[in-house]
Amino acid sequence: MEKILVVGSAGQIGSELILTLRNIYGNDNVIGTGRKTAPSQAVLDSGPFEFFNAVNRDDLYNVCKKYDINVIINMAAILSGTGEQNPMLAWDVNMNGLLNVLEIAREMKMKQVLVPSSIAVFGPGTPLDKAPQETVLKPTTMYGLTKVAGELLCDYYVNKYGLDVRGLRYPGIISHETLPGGGTTDYAVAIYYEAIKNKKYTCFVKEDTRLPMMYMPDCIKATIDLMQADFSKLKHHSDFNLGAMSFNVKELADSIKKRIPEFEISYEPDFRQAIADSWPNDVDDTAAREEWGWKPDYDLEAMTEDMLKNIQIKHDKGLI
Ligand code: SER
Image 1 (tube, rainbow, N blue to C red):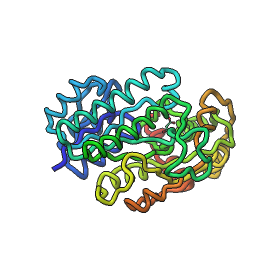
Image 2 (image 1 turned 180 degrees about the vertical axis):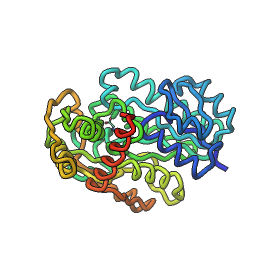
Image 3 (image 1 turned 135 degrees about the vertical axis):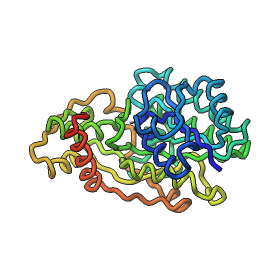
């Protein structure tokens, strides 16, 4: 039976992933953790939660022992924007936290570890269109650099120790439950909130900035599908490209304007423009499709419809 630790379950993805995992594996079998951000009430109410910093090896080890953990999902990371403002923190959380996860999983002979990677592994030299699975990985951000090193480290544990480690390169993730924190792709979430609240948004990247993106239900589906995939069928392990949709900011704004005609967008690019420009427009995810049957459900229009509906509900309830 799985006893799953979701490191970073107060974050944008972790806060939703943990609830889905609790539905599948049972509330008491999925333990949430957070560093300092308070988790949602739904996460607190539905099962165990522990506050600690995974960079502290003893704390991580003690929680794994306490709950007899045999699967760790490491969602804790400092993203690209915050990482450029505090590179040492990004290195510490993203590398030392990961190393603790892998070492403890190896020592305790765990069943599985899942560690997300990101489109941030790409950089100059990567083809901008349909970035291949195997390609140049020379990121310019500390976040991207830790994700490349992380992928290699995870594959090292597969090859050297036979540990079942899996990972996928998330595109920008768009959702309406928990806000993202400190990423370059955060504009694609903020734009929806501002469209509902103020009918206007000032974007920190230019209108022709095109990036790979994904709606949260697809992100959760991909993560759980990869967890449940037959390990013997996987040729890749820690670095699956994962695609769903690709759009530039103008196309995103236009999809909102179709539903909120008075919505206005303006542009004030900041340091995140250079980060966005270093990432590809879209990715080739053939390996994920072939090795574990990946197929996304949402395109831009379906996502916009659902995002605006759900954020309007939050707004009507006075929650935002
Ligand atoms: N959403 C992340 C970021 O923008 C990319 O993985 O940093």
